[in-house]
Length: 265
Image 1 (cartoon, rainbow, N blue to C red):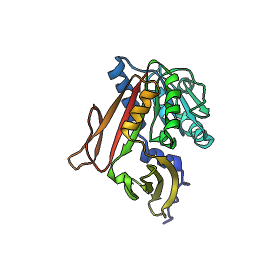
Image 2 (image 1 turned 135 degrees about the horizontal axis):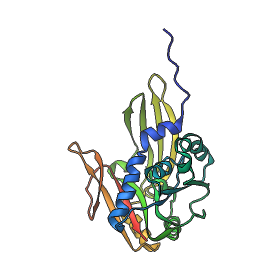
Image 3 (image 1 turned 60 degrees about the vertical axis):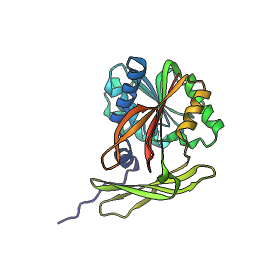
Image 4 (image 1 turned 90 degrees about the vertical axis):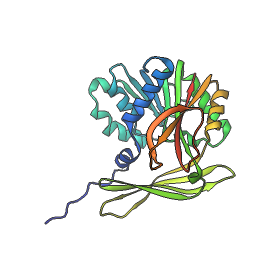
């Protein structure tokens, strides 16, 4: 019997399967805007958009939705144009605009919501740069707009560690290579291992500063946002995250947590 040959390794495909939940993210953005503003958002900007799968999902959800994606790297943008955009109907494709540019300088029409997910804004390592980004986002929003970012933390993030998740046909590894308590900076890698193959090391790498929730909220307020909110992930009986986020005033003491911080213009 001839052995089945696997397709060439596609790192963006596996990233999307392991890391992204575009339908869930779009639902959170829409529901949070409705909760805070009493209406649904239609124009969304995704900063650090990569292959902009989220933008494509956003326009698919509603005929009045428009999406703008910004990323400095042309490689993922090209991947999205070749793999995600063609899955949309021609009319939907027209409502997606992508820009190879910096989130600090790109000129985009004002939108209802700006999102920076998967901890992408952690690339800004100084408070000055973080505030500069938040100020830029503030000017890019309509009067009743929201900035939505996610963050993570906990005692597990203050030391090198690795965790794995098994998916059908492959394993995903999140590897925190280092942590510096003086700077709060860490080096992270994503590894993949397809069934029957060797592990592919450092398929994606990230050199980040881990910003805390108070730091993010204070920087947003200093950048001009009138108020901020924290949406904290609930836990299952086993202590794992349940994927459900609620607006809170206090969090839980835990080894690892994920939250959204939302700024109101």
